[in-house]
Amino acid sequence: MGSRLQELSPNAEIVSKDAALQVNIAAANGLQNVLKSNLGPRGTLKMLVGGAGQIKLTKDGCVLLHEMQIQHPTASLIARTATAQDEITGDGTTSTVLLCGELLKQAHRYTSEGLHPRVIADGFDIARDATLEFLDGFKRDFSGEDSPRVQDDRELLRCLASTSLKTKLEADLSEKIADAVVSAIQCVAPEDATESPVDLNMVEIMTMQRKLGTDSRFVNGLVLDHGGRHPDMPKELLNCHVMTCNVTFEYEKTEVQSGFYYSTAEEREKLVESERKWLDERCRQVVEFKRSVCKEGESFVMINQKGIDPLSLDIFAKEGILCLRRAKRRNMERLTLACGGSPIHSVEDLDAAQLGFAGKVSEVSL
Image (cartoon, rainbow, N blue to C red; front, side):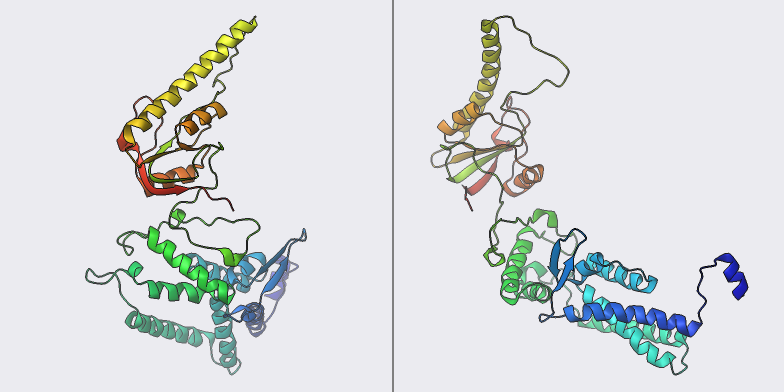
């Protein structure tokens, strides 16, 4: 048999079953020894240095497993198990690796005494069934009709978030982030969280340069990373009608290959005047629409996905309209969900039912 294997692959290594078992257990123990110092609030940080010299400090097991180059098949299988744990629950990657390593370490004690691995595997199956039975009796069920909604139990959610975050962040920062996470989930959670999943795309994490982690805070609303582009536009508005549109208010290039030719300065002036007249007419329609829907004490905000030229901005600023241009598409989708209304693609048939509403809109510089 050995000669046949060597003929099939000259580089093949032939080992006994005991040696192969020892190699697999050693691989699991090696992965366990790397990650065991990360576990818990007192876990140590690992410094990862990339090939280009970039430095990353973390004690998150999932990040470490993704950054490590694991060659051994058994260790790679354990790493994929931990990755699956992270994708399902978002936490527990380090615990999964430590549990797998410890189970194999304890199994090695019995195999060295002559117990067959098949018997140990059957024992693991019995232990798994017993654990699932215990968890079924220990868990709290929120899926019944008479059961309270899980998103209303803030203390329970805060404990869950704090348990996960304290193993990854500093103690002071973890409590603050845990409260922010719970507030964000309660803000976007559907009425029946057991039937429909929470849309985490509705929660955005914005990184502010030259700020500390302890300066992080939760904003119960929408934060757009762009403001008004005219110095005379208002910085704070109350009781605002929000117009989300995808309409251009600037000169645009033609969609097909074409050109405009003129022979005199007067012809050029006429061309510029006609383009300006076209934009002024659009601005006039928006201004008249604003005057028709805004009552005493109400304001108007226009958020446009396309551009607005300086002259149009000046027209809107004189009318007291706060305009944001070139807004991101994801923000446009969130605006209609948070404030109501619908996107507007033309200024020809404007209707008040297409507008959203916001109690307060303010511009803040950090």
